[in-house]
Image 1 (cartoon, rainbow, N blue to C red):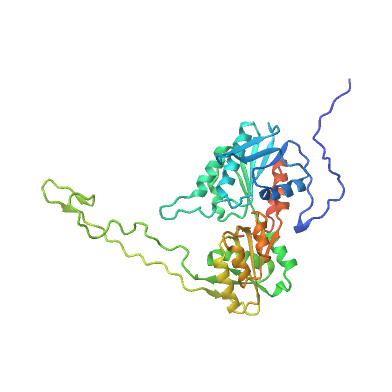
Image 2: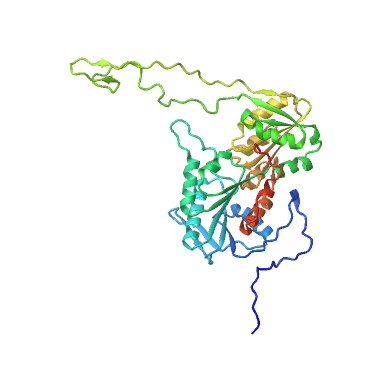
Length: 398
């Protein structure tokens, strides 16, 4: 009887010299079977990134239907078996953020109940990442969302440029926070003429570390902007002065200790030092931008009023061209019109968020494709390979 030998699956991809692709990565070869890639978006525009990723991986997008019923409830139907497989859900976040989150949660739970082995969420832009700190009587919504994703069945997340890196600590499972900076830096080197005469600008002191990382890798100077044109986080009436100092009410108010007699003895108050109100000065620039190309770097560009104000100041200080580099181009509300009418020459963002409509409204908006690094992350996680290669030459503060 012939001996039957069992070995690992051989790749169906040719082992000839891999074709070189942009931004330093090569065409990938997925050798292990048993994984599927799905998109949890119900809108066609949001599936473009998923299609690019599957094309690079050489696989087909998983068969599923995601839609909203007439009462706006989200429904997901998975059209193929996922039992015992690694499932990657690619979810790009459109303007309707809450619908996209619900689609992801329902899709993850459907795959969990279908006995998928691992469910990995590929969420290039993680929503609610700006709400990662307690503000007054608010809540840390990002923490709430992480708990919801874990409960729905996700076991791993691939994302890109979290607004705060500490967000990774909100999760009870692994989070790979990829970086878009290699792609944006290569764009600067290849698409900005005379970039050696540029200076990297931090729009605020909180963005200085990110800007410094860009400046060091490009061997360029650094400028930091401080102050603001208007107070973006004004202290609204939040009850800090309640209860009022003078009272006209009678009876026990809760601030007095009751006594056995008719008369009440007032509770001695504690004198606290007065808090000085925070007041930022007008926008100033620390660094010489005269006769230079100013490149403002940030992780998110949404409401662009601050960027437009910064561009006006840089023009006044002598910068002759102004570029904005950001990973996530949300570009909400009137952003395209404001950019088109401003002193900004070009806004460069990645395709982590769909913004084709905004590009039609404003030709200054340019896109850098990051599907390559997302596809490579999927391949490495499925094959059990190290992710360190994707973080080479990446600074901690990047």
